Amino acid sequence: FTAPETLADPVDCPWCKRKTRTRKQITFSTLPRVLCLHLKRFDAARNRKIHDPVSFPINGLNMGCHLPHWREVRANSTEEGVAGSPSSPDVLYDLFGIVNHIGSLHQGHYVVNVKVKDEWFQVNDAFVEKNDISVGESPSNIVKSDGAYVLFYIRRDATSSSR
Image (cartoon, rainbow, N blue to C red; front, side, top):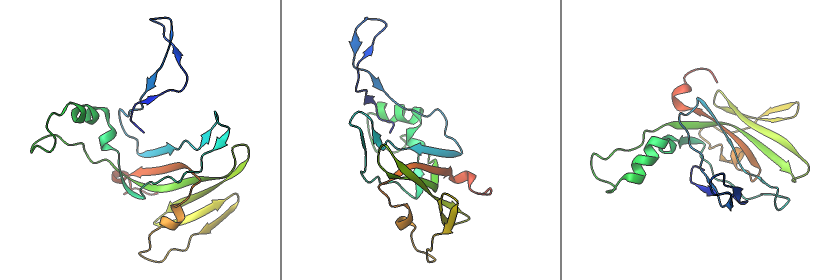
């Protein structure tokens, strides 16, 4: 998501006064305590919902390599794997909430899975129920969804406070 992306529609260039292909790139100057990732699940140009499954980590999402300074260091590095070469810092996040969209581009319903004190709950309108997970079982069956729309992560160094 931090790789440069060419925009679909040409943009008017104020310097050359022509429509030109334009690239955009998302970067992070600093990383927040709570990271909210909004996934592109709707394709308005084709008038459809995107149902492709998305893979995302439950624990240990490392965002350190997406900070601009470390992207520059990596891009300008001439020798990879050399001892003493700078490596990006680990800025780790753990998933604590998922908004899922059920339905089509034009209509649908949102259901949320949220983690509170190491337990997962499903929130569906006014109904909240605990997801039954045995001790030591992975919550992957809770988070596995082709409808994942918004992901909420908390920075690992911020997890010592209440969640």
